[in-house]
Each structure stands twice: as C-alpha cells, then as structure tokens.
Amino acid sequence: MRIRSLGVIDDAVVELSPGFTAVTGETGAGKTMVVTSLGLLLGGRADPALVRIGAKAAVVEGRIVLRPDAPAALRALEAGAELDEGALLISRTVSAEGRSRAHVGGRSVPVGLLGELADDLVAVHGQTDQQGLLRPARQRQALDRYAGDAVAAPLEKYAGAYRRLRAVAVELDEITTRARERAQEADLLRFGLDEIAALEPLPGEDAELAAEAERLGHAESLASAAQAAHGALAGDVEDPEGVDANTLVAGAHRALESVRSHDPVLGGLADRIGELGILLADVAGELAGYADDLDADPLRLAAVEERRAALTQLVRKYGDAEGGLGAVLEWAERGSKRLLELDGDDERIGELTAERDALRGELSALAQALTDARTEAAARFAADVTAELASLAMPHARVTFDIRQTEDAEGVEVGGRPVAYGPSGADEVELLLAPHPGAQPRPIAKGASGGELSRVMLAVEVVFAGSDPVPTYLFDEVDAGVGGKAAVEVGRRLAKLARSAQVVVVTHLPQVAAFADRQLLVEKTVDGSVTRSGVTVLEVEDRIRELSRMLAGQEDSQTARAHAEELLEAARADA
Image (tube, rainbow, N blue to C red; front, side, top):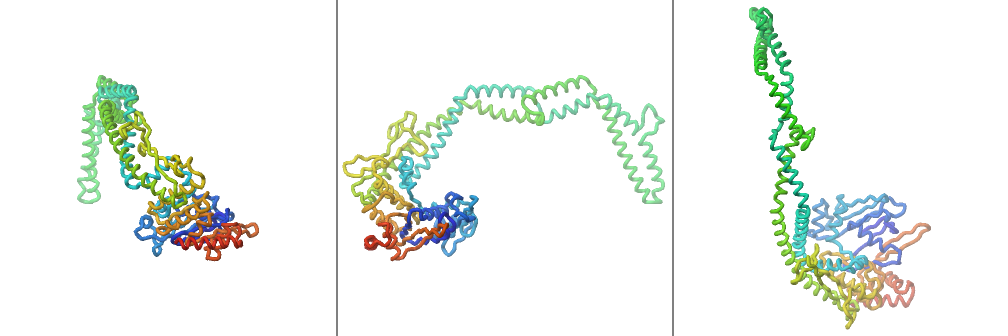
C-alpha cells in the first residue's frame, strides 16, 4: 500500500506480508494514518482535513492479491476492472476541496463499490467495535453473525413475515379507525355518481351541443346566406333572367370546346373549366340541401341550452374548465373504483384479520426457531470465547449468554407465553462474564476491569475472525489495557490466527509485536517547520532497538535490549 500526502505521511510504502504484521511507533507518529489509509481503500469516508497541508490531494494505492474466483475479484470484474497478474489494484484520491475519486483495476468506479469489495477483503476490529459490542443490540447481531445460516435462514423468513404483518396491521387500523370518514367519502361519491348517471353525458357531447347551439341561434342568417349563395351559383327562381355562375362557366366551356382542336393549351383550359362547372354544381346542390334541412325550431334551441347548462354544472362540480366533460367522465371512472373499495371494507376487514392472525402464528413459529438457533449458537460461541480467554491469561473466566424475552399481552407466543417482538425476533441477548470461580455472571460492561474487558473483546474478535471468510484481519489497538503475561498471550493468540490468515495489528505492546512475522515502524521526523512520517520495514537489529524503546522508552538501554532479544527468542520458540 502506498500513501501520499495523508496527514503527517508525505510519501510512504507499507509492505504487508503474509502472516502477522505489527505496526508500531511513537504516539503521534502516524500509526493511525496507516489504518485510515486502509479505511479509504475500503470505501471509508473521505475527510479533506486528512490531506497534508500544502498538498492538493491525498492518494492511497493498494495492491491486493486474490484468487481469480474470489468474490471480490468477480465483483471487480463485473464492474469492468482488470486483474494485474492475479492482483487487484485499488486507488483512492481525496482532494483538499473534499472531492473523492476511486479506481479499481484501472477503471473509475463509485466509492460505494469499494465498500462492497471490503466485505470480502478485510475485517477491521478496533476499539470502536469493542465499545459497540458492549451494547446488547450489537451482541445479538454478533451472535447471529456467528451462528451463520442456522439463524440467517429463519431470520430472513421472520423479517419478511414481520414486514407483512406491520403492513397488514397499518391497513387494518386505517380501515377500522377511519370508518366514519370512509362512510362519508362513500356517500359523497354515490351522490356524485348518481348525479352524473342521471344526465348520462357522452364523450365530446359538450362540444357538439355548443356547435348546435351556435347554428340554431343563427338559423335565419344562415338560411339567408345559403339561399343567396345558391342563387349566385345556380340562379334565382324569382329572377329567371338573372345571370348565375353556372351559366357563365358553361358558356366559357362551350367557347373553348369549339376551338380546342386547334390548340392543346386551350383544350387543357377547357377541361379545367369543365371540372369547375362540376364543382359549382355540387356546391350548389349542397347549399340547397343545407337550406332545406336547417332546423330553426326554437324549442330545440331551448332544449340544447338547457342540456348545456346541466353539463356545465357537472363540469364545475367534478371536472375543470380545461378538461371539460372529459374530466367529469374521468372523475366518474375513478369514483366508481374508489366506491368499490370503500363498499368492500367489511369484506376487506375480514380478509386482513384472517391474514393478521395467520401471520402472527407464523411469526410465533419463526420466533421460536430463532430462539432455539440462537440458544444453540450461544452455547458454542460462549465456549469458544471462554477457550480464547484461557489462552489470554484468564483461565478461570467464563462467558455465557443471557437470552430472554419480555412478556407482552399483545406479543407473539414463544415458549407458550406472549412476548414482545421486533424486526429481529423476540430475543434480548446479553453477553455475561464471570471473571473467576464463585463470581456471579454479570454484563461484560459491568463485570470486567479495563484489562479484562480488552481481553474479552479481543477473544470475541478472534472468535469472529475464525468464522469470517475474509482473508485479512486488521486489529487496531484492541490490546489496550493489557500488559504483562496477558500481553504475551495476546501476541501468541494473534500469531496463531495468522497461520490461517493475514493479520495486521497496530499495537503499543512489545510483547505483541515480538510475535509478528514482520514489524513496520511508523516514524516521525521534523525538518525545520516541516513534519513528516515514514514507514520502515525493520530488520533484526532495528527491530530489537524498536522493541527496546517500547519496553523502556530507551533504544540503547542494555537491559531493555536483553529483554527485547528474549521476547523475540521466546516468540520464535513458540512458533
């Protein structure tokens, strides 16, 4: 992993080997930046305050070796990334302005993809996780995660049934508590639908009636105009000597017909005049028919206006000026559907009540299955953590789980009694510790000293790590509060875990660092007003000096040096 312009780190390469890597250094040297860098590669939040002063952006690049069929590799390939000789190259850039960019396998990707890949690449265990595990809700989640499919399968079914029960309960409550409102709504809908049905409006009828009213209101002027136009085209019966258009056009046609054989141009014009005569005759016939058919009945006009007024009232009540009668018909269609829903409330209440009762029965069975699966997993989990504590210099400590339910008359039945339930079941889960024989098990937040709590949490993390499928584990100072023999046992346990996975530990304990296969030193240097931190792989002599500093605060102390050499020898012998 290469880190540039991040916090106190100007430019550093972090070489994480297989097995156990310990990251050490003075307080404030920048060990946290190593963890932060890995967090950025895993999709963590980009904070512009992390960018080194004077730099435009911080950049973290990582090379992760993967099997071609590993889930993270397949997900990266799906996103368009490419593997580089079996390795996945990831980079994250954070600008001083706060913009963030991510690249995977040479392809620009959303930062969210890094978070997806992280789930299959690295499990991070730190002091924040320890504090979170003190909460019963997190302890239940931890137990469920440890139990795997034994809990996951019934929990998925339970969650689905729980969501459906909530939806049914909300709908049932709405129908029953709003019965009066819904009855009033149904009455209003019936009145409106009856009013519309009484008039039986037709689509487009308002436009047709408007046109008819306009025609009937001007019947006399329309008839007079039609008759005048007819007379001009076909002649007036009262003036047989008058000249009309048909007569004139016929005369023009005859004049050209007599000479058309002498010039084709005049022949063509004669044909067009003939067509004009036919058209004039047709129009004249239609004008005569229009005048004969025109209805000037004032009773019909009154009926049309009355119908239009009634339809206008419907538009005002149930439509709008823009939509006209069409909006009224749409309202009627929607209203009919809604009325069917409201009228079917009684039937719907029966259906929902039956479904609710069936779902409660299903939830009872699933909640019982969850309780049984958690109880079985809790016994194994507690035994594994207790065994880990024995390896961490707490041989007499005993960890147990308290799995209980709270009675609630409105709850679901578990174990033959109604209990409260939620989206994750009916169980309240709490991790208990008895630190020595004869001690009563108490919640770990109350029953453990600081050093004991760190070891209990580390034991829990190690048990989790054993059940996690990810290839790399990062422990960020989870050994805080531990010292002496217990610290040696912590280092030994982490070294044992590193035989089957890659383990990276940020630590301040020399007893832990001595067990590492590789030790990295984060060291800060000050050059005038500029502070920089670098990361160095320690060889044997340098490693002894660093362990001496961690032991006594003095790199050249002969006593500390002898102790450091002894720690390394003991760790090698233990391996």
